Length: 446
Image (cartoon, rainbow, N blue to C red; front, side, top):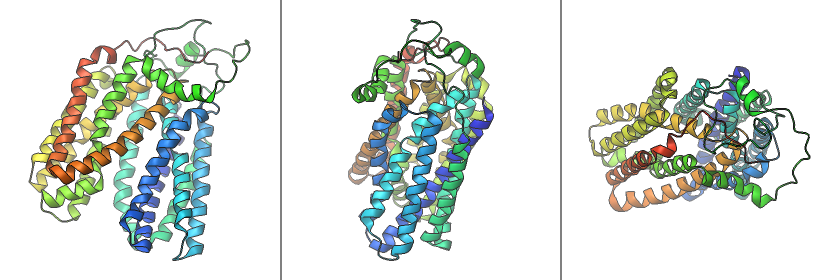
């Protein structure tokens, strides 16, 4: 593992996520108090998701032209610049900001942020491989969940104590630290040509080296720059289609992404509005229990991530069973959560969800990264990010309808059913999902 660059990558992700949470909480609070409109407040997360979906669709054009660390740096620098403009406008405008400008800057930041996730997840396999890859994914997951737990818990306190404007200033400082970390990240494969073994050599898509060291990976997959003339530039439409074509050509990628979409379709049930409704309608508790449930959920996810990290050697050789067992246990616990009416037991159930959820997420992410070459991975992850954003938007609308018409208990039961359907699909697709992970995969380019 290239520990120094991975540490900087982990640092920038942690700081950036913390800044995102602080600025969203502060801005939503500010918008609500200034406009007294729930719809205006909802525009902030809605614009973020919409801009990220568009950005994810267009990301291949950027990923095809620039190195991953450079993309991360430009994204982080642009977000900091737009955020500084937003902060300056809010301070100078006082109680009469131009909301069209505010929402435009939010959309611009979110558009740049849409490049971050596919670039980050594509860079991880370049910095780690074999057992180190799953360990790296586990560390990223634990970091994400820790920031979520601390961020959503402390951001409300900071906004209440310091006010929205000063909280936004703290977020600006975090974005600056994230930019410094980003500037120090180096791609160990930068400048390597993406042809394999000898000219003309190709192997079946869906397989890639699973247990080699980074040095072996470079020696096996990459050689010196070829002397043949460069290929003519691909048309933009072709570049945009590449990630989708790679997914369509790989049975494993299609199965993994389909399972991910089915599972994610029910994943929005943990959005605050649904959790709050469950606490009030089923548990007959106050809003405080909304916070308790969220805290228990993230605490369980952190604990689960640490256990997965400790069991990397065991799980690395059993990625498919770990993913399926994790999803099945998570689905059953979600059903138990829906049917339970005892508040203390609810917290225990949510806490227990952490381990199977992390087993499923980390195993699925690792399998995805091992199913395509490191050069083609950004294209695939960009397509996946677009599908993820679209699926989550559909999920919010669908789950909102179910909650209103069928009740909050049936909402969580439906979410559990979707997860179990994804498990059944995975069992029937196990031949595609368990294809050999020992042969290198060719890049689609060239």
